[in-house]
Structures are given as C-alpha cells and as structure tokens.
Length: 521
Image (cartoon, rainbow, N blue to C red; front, side, top):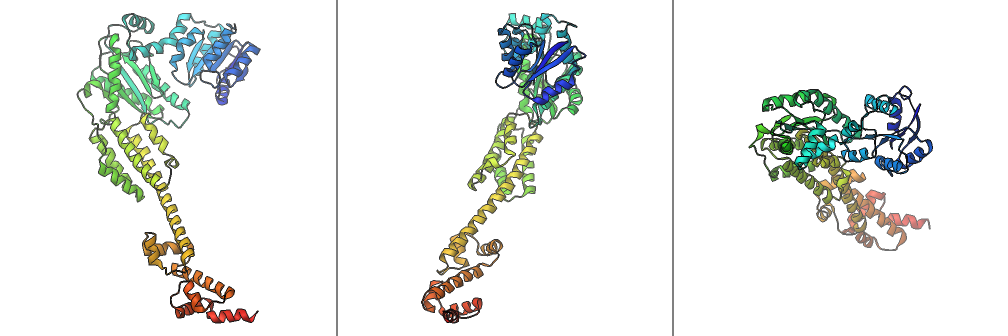
C-alpha cells in the first residue's frame, strides 16, 4: 500500500480530505499530516511518502517552495498533488517544472482527487503532455485575452487550447455580484465552480468543443469564448439560461456581459475588452444580460449627487428618522437608475454620503470605526455589487450610524448637565437662577429644568436651595458669623427671605438651630 501525507494549514481541511476519500480502496494509507511547509518537509524526509497532497498557500513555506525544496534535496520519487483555493494560475508553469502530478481547485471534487491518486498508483499513468496541458491552459488563455500575442504565440495557443485561428468568436464575462464575502473563501469558490459547470453544459453547443477554457480573474469574475455568431437576442437568451442554471446554486446574483463579435482568434482581446467595458452600464440598465450590440452608442452619466439630497439625508440621519432616511435613499437610487449613473459616479456619491456622516460623528467626538457596517460598505468599491446590493448595505450603514449618533448626542447632553451641576456647586453663593445658567450653557431654560430633574431626581430650584441651606448650617455650626452675613454668603440678598426658607427646610429658624447646638455644649 502506498503512503500519503496531507499538508494544509486548516485542520478541518485535512480532516475533510481524510473522510472524503476512500484511501485504502485506492491503495493508499495516510501516514501523516502537517500544517505548514516546514513541518511537511521534515515529515517527508522522515517517512518518504509516495504522494503528498498539499495546499498551495500556507505560512512559512508555501506549497511550491515545499516541492522545490524536496526536489533540490534529491527526492524525485515523491509525487505531489497541489490544491488551490481558486485559479492561482501564475503558479501553473512552475508546477509543471517541478513535475507536479496534478493541480486541483477547491472545493475538492472526490472523483477528481480519486482519479489523480489512481494515476499515481499506476492504474492510468497520464502522459507528460496531458499534465502540462492541465497546468498551463488557463495561463495561456489569460495571455490571449489580456496580452498582445504575436503570430507565433497565437499558433501555440491554437495548438494548446485547440482553438481555431480564423473563426468568429465573442468573449463572454460572468460576474457574481452580492457574494457573501464575510463567509469562508471556499464557499465563494464553490459558487464559481457551479458557474463553470453551468457554462460547460449551456455553452458546449457554441464553444467549438472548448467550453472548458476559462479565465478566472478572481473569485467573482469568469471569462470564456463562444465560437458561434449568435445575434443579440440569441446571446441574451443564452445568458438567461446560464443564470437560470447556475443562479439558484450560488450565494450571489449573476450578471452576464457579452462582448463584440470578432473575426479571428488574434482579436479575442478586443472582444474581452468590450465585454469588460459593459460593466460600466450595470447600474444604468437594470438587466441580467448586457450585449455589446444592444448598447453600442449608449452613454452613462458621470455626475455628482445632488447637494439637496445629501443635505436632506444627513438631516434625517441626525433626527434618527428611519422612514425619512429610507425615502431619501429611495430617491437617490432612483436617480442613479433613471439618470444612468456610471459605477464610478455611484461610488463617488456613496463616498460623499459616508464623508458627510463621518464628519457628523467626528464633530460629536465619536469614531466612525465604531460603525461596524462601514467596512462592508467600503468594500463595494472593489467587490461586484448590484445597485440593490449597494442600497441594502447603505441603508444598514445609515441606520447604524443614526443609532450611534443618537448615543453620542445623549452622552454629550449628560456631559453638559454634569457641567451645569458642577457650576451650581461652585457658584451657589452668587445670584444665579435657572434662566442665567441656561443662558451661560446655551440651553433652553425649560429643557434644562426637565433634564436636571430627569438626571438628578430633583428640580433645579430645590437642589439650589438644598446646597445653600446645607452651607448655611455648616457656617452656623462652625463660625460666629451673623445671620445676615451667612444669608449673603449663600446667595440670599434678603435675610428675611433666607430665614423663611431655612425654617421651611430645617424646621426651625437659623437662630433656633444655633442655640440648640450651643445648649449641648
């Protein structure tokens, strides 16, 4: 039985492979696991496995560096199967150079990995040309669409990918919008793989037998070629069938962009560019499938958000008027559609709103980092989103910001009332009253009176009288000052009124209070 080791920095990924594959039935025994390249190298040196199944991205020493180190040590017997999160095709040619046996994409397909292990076990040894084809196909396709291939390179592309040089074709871009990027990368990757599967099924009739030629530019962007001069209506119906087939199985919203028809493989780059350019119309035309011929000559608007809308939105935010915020947001996004805002203009408008909200928060001594939904909204600049997807995140940001700003205002108000109390405690001996203090602190007298009662459980005038009488009692106990002197020192201009108020609070006059104390001496 052949020996295998598993290398992945995620323990659940390793345990998943252990349970996914019937190792013994395929003639293998898993004799070890490692969580990074350095540990794996030491394990390989010790047990000399027949095969290593390794992730390509790991800390310390990645998968390709691990393979290079093993080969440079003189070990050319151990076979390697590389696993990658998605199309890391920049590694493809290097993988071929290190004599890698297979290169598989996550999420791992049980049958693909089993087939790769059987090849290593000797059940069906593949030829070198087949292995190279699998590794460099995507890399070649990438240069075809994004580079400037010369005649010699085009011939090589035609040979490797089995693509005709002089047949009409068009590039089609599939974009996954509103994906749940907060979830694990593997889940998003699985959505991309489902799109690929649907493409292979729906596009086989139009792809000259080459529907497997994909260029995955990211987790959410896929490009392929159609070798049939479908008119605009036919290509739109093809895109709709593709969305119908793949859409229910992915966490996101599919958009399809069909580039211009070009007469030869040499001009595939032009079709790719025209398909990419169609993304500029994604908010202006609310369609699932955009076709180059249908939008030729159309324009999008590069403009700013109306200042009145921004002002209205910020007012509703500060008032914590959720219904008003929602209505204003509806008007904003209706304007984006009706006036055919470009994606850049939409993002600029959203940025202006974020800047306005941040300004309010900063002016109130808050920190916008406390608004948890802000990073997700900011990521819409680089993650594909539908207009409705952006709107949902934007409303979430506004609601959370409104709550946070309301909390800041409450904290500020409490801070003000605290300063009012401190002022009273320090100046009660002066001629102060609710009206004069309200003026000093720029507060409405009625509001200040209500806030003081709510905060301290006593009315303003009662509190002021309490601290004045308390100080008068202290002076009567500790000094030999006259009653009229004490009255003046605690803020009473009229000594008779002082005596009256003192008796009301204490139950006896100031003189009676002092005599009672002296009687106990």
